Length: 198
Image (cartoon, rainbow, N blue to C red; front, top):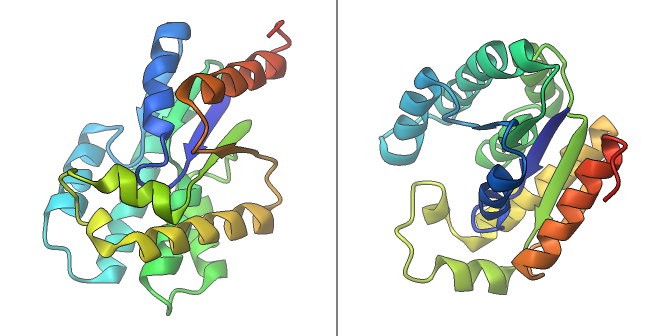
């Protein structure tokens, strides 16, 4: 079972993935970008480096995605995989970054990178302006977070558009809920999908 957690920075998905590590000890936990050695180098370039071209940024993300799929997702299709972000983020951020990027082209490039493999379960963490503002307080911001709250909310809207366009069924998570309540929803969804009792 291939599970992707999507959401903008500070939405709480990474916190939930950390909790799941203690509950599903045999599962594979990964992330995009940065789930492979190449991805870790690309992640550092994207978040700390000086990539000024939006087109270059797009292709760095795509390179990471293709390598990640080849090394992590494809060889482990018979296992439970949790991924902190995936291609939905890739398309949504690219849509927000460059108005010249054609959506059909973005989808085609991303599908090429992941060999058209869609997740079995998708969780979308939805946040709001006040929550982002609160969670960014006192945080060392990376290059993405420095683009501002309005930018992050636009990315979130684009995530919804991509999911809808591709017709992917998903579970929407209200990021303002308690960590425990969110966790219960996620575990129930995972167990129900696998036919276990929640």
